[in-house]
Picture (tube, rainbow, N blue to C red):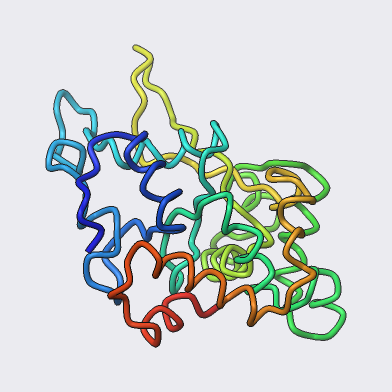
Length: 230
């Protein structure tokens, strides 16, 4: 579908900037994912000397720290990348005219959603473990952290900003990384996140679809709308 093999982080950034967005794993649209277009050597190849060799997994933190692409769970609750150019329209479409406080005041967000947003707003970019500990997401306490944090990403209010790894005594990193989350406006800037507010949410959706179909004209618009639905 994309018709370009991805060998490096630069290739990933170039392709996402060209087409506008790219899910990480296979999705409802065949061929529209990093997984289906990445070189064999850069995809997950197992373990060597106790370390995981998976270049693509490392790229997500790198593109975030370099502010090259937005990354998070944006596509039917699954992860993917969005270009800086289309990010304002994603925010406008997914928020449907609401900043978070207005959404909560209208009864469209839960107290759990507000608890996480308020906590991150107060502390700044925060690791998953710290959020869970502080808000009692543990055995016998609150449940559903992944559901809430995924919903807040889908709505573009909260975003990953880095992945931090535990280290062994010899300095080797291990594990899958502890995500650090922030409020989107704090990390990407209020101006960028809200610059499409002058448009209607449906107009922003149309712009996203038009942009990707310029490069990939064969994409089915109905399937695209389902993939992009918040």
